[in-house]
Length: 220
Image (cartoon, rainbow, N blue to C red; front, side, top):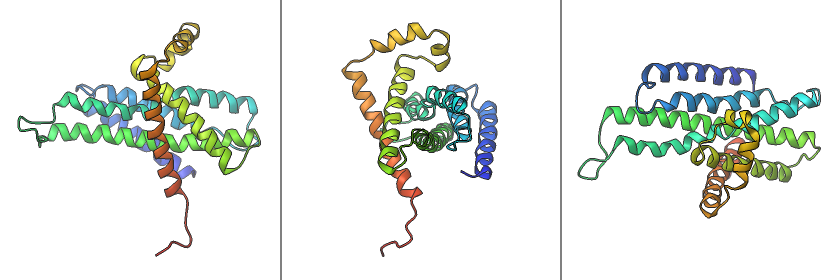
């Protein structure tokens, strides 16, 4: 990604976070400010993870570990879409209400979800390729395997954040306690959720590969 695009993304998040602070902070969707900021952190970290040998190996793996711990926050906002039910969008006739406030909050939530999910996903693909380059495993198959593995880990992270309500900072503060919690969290419903979120992210990956691959000879 070019420096111009990186700064474009940074400027967007700066303006967007200020907008949320001014117009949404005190609404029932006040969580959007923190969740959007947390979704931006792994995006910013991914900008600093180099896939070139000149980056110090210690710095590379520390940044990668930080990115891995924060990455689930990027797709996490997709699960926030369920909070739209708080707005009671359906009228007594069962049809959607044409209410400006409801659609305003819907638009803001959707913007945060899409931007964090898709740009965050670019970061995941970038990190996966950087890891494989460090491990000297550079080919399409290993890139897919590494990306799929990171997707699975992020789906587990989504479960931890959404249902166990464990934030990354909690893990840093008391790792021993939460590691024990993570070891006992596995059950059928948890596995089902992880599988479904993995499928969702694999679909995003499929879309990403289609739109990022140029075809010089498209078939008419």
